[in-house]
Each structure stands twice: as C-alpha cells, then as structure tokens.
Image (tube, rainbow, N blue to C red; front, side, top):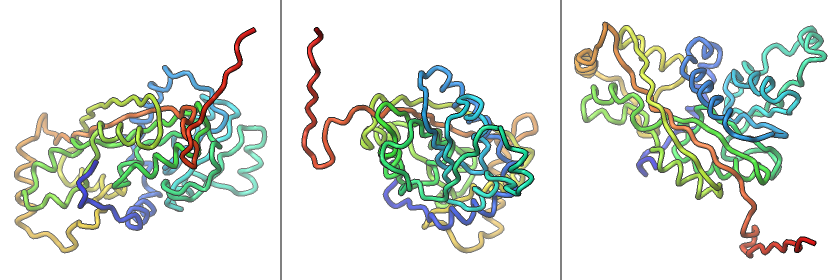
Length: 294
C-alpha cells in the first residue's frame, strides 16, 4: 500500500473535482483511452449483469457504453462531487426529457462516498470504476463496499494509477520536494486488497502509456484543469521559489525527445468475483448440503 504517512484530504479532492467538472471533457483523453482498454478486457469476460454501478462516474462518459453493451440494464452512477454528477446528468428540462421518451432509461445518479455506498447488500452485479481508486489513500474500504453491494457471482472491474505514473516529473524535482507529488499504490498491493475485501480469483495487469506535451506548462495546466493535483494532507502549503522551478524545468528538459516532453502513466487494471460466502456475518461457518443426484 502507500506509505503510512501519506493521507489524502477527501474534501479537497471533492472541491478540485467540482472545479474541474465543467472543463473535464476537454482533458479526459487518458480516461477515455483507459475506458476503451477496460472495455476490451470486458469483451473476454462472460457476465450478464442485471444492474450496473459506475463507481466514481465523473462526468458520466462511460455510461452510454453500458447502455449499448447491455441494453435495458439499469445503471447507477455514483460520484462524491456534485458538480461531476451535474455534468453526467446533463440537461434535465422538460423538452429534453420528452426527447428521451422511448430511449433507454436514464441512470440513477447518486452523490456518495465510495467508502459508504447508500446501496443495499447484493443489489448490483457489476461494479465498474475507471480511474477513481487513486483518489483514496487506502482503497480497501471502497473495495469492501463494492463487495458488499455485489450479488454472489457479481464482478468488480477497475482501473487506477500505479507508482510509475509521472515518474519523469518526480525524478526532475529536487529530492526535498517529494511531497509535491501524489503517491500511487502498487499493483500487487491492490491485488492483496481485493483478497482482503473478500473477492475471489483476482486478475491484475498493467499498461505503460506515454503521453507527450510541448512543454512543462502544458503538462501542469492539464493536471490542474483535470483536478489531478496533489491533495495529500502533507502537501507543501507555501509558494515555491524561483530556484525550484528552474531546477524542475532544467532537469525535465533533459528528457525531451522529438521536441516533446514524455509523461509516463502506469495504468493498473483489476477484476475479481464475489464468491459464495464461507462464513456468516456473525463468524459462523456456512455448511451447504447438496442433494444426491437421483
């Protein structure tokens, strides 16, 4: 897991997501590509969901894909930032609602924390979460909640960011400025968290994606616009000096290739299943008797 001294400020995460909501669609290229790759993985998995939860739905860009892949299946969209949900919901005026008549039912939009879902036990059969878990310093409570709301035989499928994300930027900072950047959880620790949450047969893999920018300012602007700046409780609060920026720029410029600055993004993918429980909520073992075939 992340270092024990790394803690995120959830209120700050929500505020920044809220500020980024209106313009997020202009800078969500990475999220769209990761969603596409998650969809490719889902193509090889046999599951027929009866209700889908998009956990950390953001502005709702993944929701139309569920309606196309699983026509008529109810969708629940949950995010902790009200402004993101407003973007996902779109125009809900009377004319817009009339135009939707006869089309697939709209998702249910719910503002909630991923670690305390306002859903009944065993109420969904697919939990999908695209690039949300990195905004939790400990993903285990959210994974436990996903396990609780899944029906037996249901599946969680997620993507998040791994430790090599922004490695060029991290290496270009002075060693004393390590707290300026977010920390990310290792793939193996996420697999362990799935098991601790009660999931069975976890499958983990990862991709390295390289994004390029014309200059450092373009990268920093993209991070700010998408609300993807450091929200740790130990982040530096004061303004950095001129020497800090000179050190960062000069070291990052050494990595320039083909007149572009590279940015590595380690994307971690995981999916796992909710199996039949072996222990009841009160700790007693569950014994199942199967009738003999006649």
